[in-house]
Image 1 (spheres, rainbow, N blue to C red):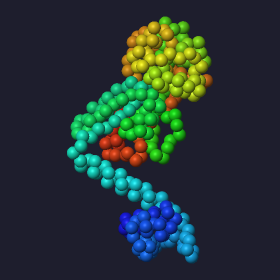
Image 2: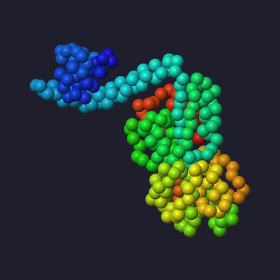
Image 3: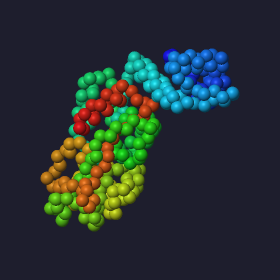
Image 4: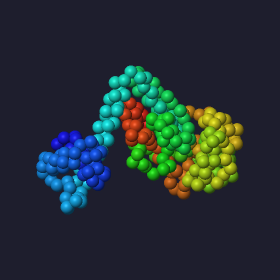
Length: 294
């Protein structure tokens, strides 16, 4: 069984025509037919049932088509990555992470990755969910550590990391600071502090309002450091998620788990990257970060 025969068969199915498949591959129609006959003889099964001038794909043919197309896609990716690895161009890995994350795992991953692959420069940026999503779509990011707000797409690699538990940071002077756990309804009279760029404020507020159920007024901070100063000043509460190991905070801040009725509020965090951009360094960085977050 030759790779060329697989390519011919996939072209026949994609174009639904022996003639168009021949034109697409710059060969004669008889060459396409001979290749198909040889392929079926080699496999010992029929992939196509011919009926006069039309044909129908068999069950075996449908399976072979799906697997063959995936194989060709993998071969293209292998070729492209091999060429890239063998080039003399500086390699840059663009990594994005959601601005709610503040653990040490990402920096530890960068340190470990850089010691193994010193030829790769790592560019890191944080952002809201939407900013990271659009970074992946545009190609300005190679991979992103992000929460899941959309259904998984087959165009992306989606590695589920963990269900991060939601925690509320409050001033120790808040009347709620003595509680062991908080319900969403307990926070109704307080302002919700969100870390967001100016451009994404309304989008983030809508998400917290409609998905997490916060009906509060919203205050905004550009960074987590600014948000925590607002918490210390007792201006509101800051929802965070335990994606990895949480950093220590000022003794003036209380951390209290958030519940909805009797269940902890959680959000799923994942690593995402475009399937078409899959490469050795992306997979290696993802592997190391995944191990750190476990």
